[in-house]
Image (tube, rainbow, N blue to C red; front, top):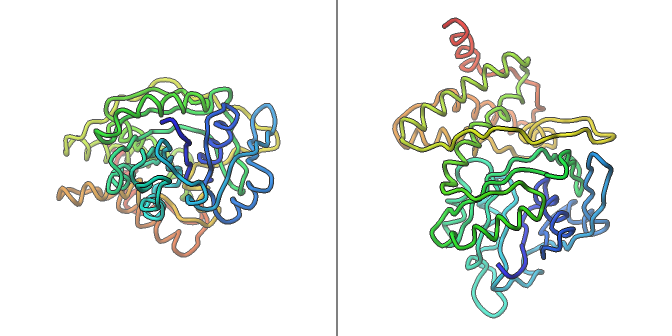
Length: 328
């Protein structure tokens, strides 16, 4: 990939990547909208780190046409999983300078869940999936809290399509230059299934629940997911040892995980593409995932009425499973 990285989405990951690549000399353009576009265009991306704040000027535009995309560029999809289809539909058939369409460019998918690669492959042949572990948070436009330094996150990179395979090493190198502990994997789908198991706490912590019950509920949900993967003969990558170091950021009170952040901002939540991916797999196979279904439904209803995180109890199905597990 000799050209620019066209980053679609200016949330925590997209804005941080734009800032990191600017510092590393990797050519990149951030595609933002709304308040994020206004703030970043006016003063750059502010990254709050353990050693202090940095404001990094980045190239930012409001639409992909403004970048004049060309052969050699790549699309880095940094929106949340629930926004991937809309984001790709909006850009895929925009023209390239010299002929062709954006769909002809390699697409790098950074989403949680199991669906983004299929969404990208619907229009693009060369798709590279990335499983990202990062402690960054984003509650204000143009500002990212990144409490890990100098390694800012972990990235596992793999080809989601045959045509994506030649680009895996270039993507890995890009992410390493951005400060990630980045490595290539043979089966990105298995790696993303492992990541999904770790993401299940995201959808449990948004309920009104104490830590012991939260952990027990997460374990019950994880066991259900593991049983589903086993029934469908879907491989899961081994759990990795070690954790990403996280330090205090001056003036910042450590917050919650991404689903909590989305509800706090009043934006859409990715539960349909976390537990919802489990529900989809189960229904397609004639199996059952009642705990995932209960969480998905409760979170969907909460988000639809503009509810706040921590305002409703765990679904009864989850509480029953937790109590049954404690009694066994």
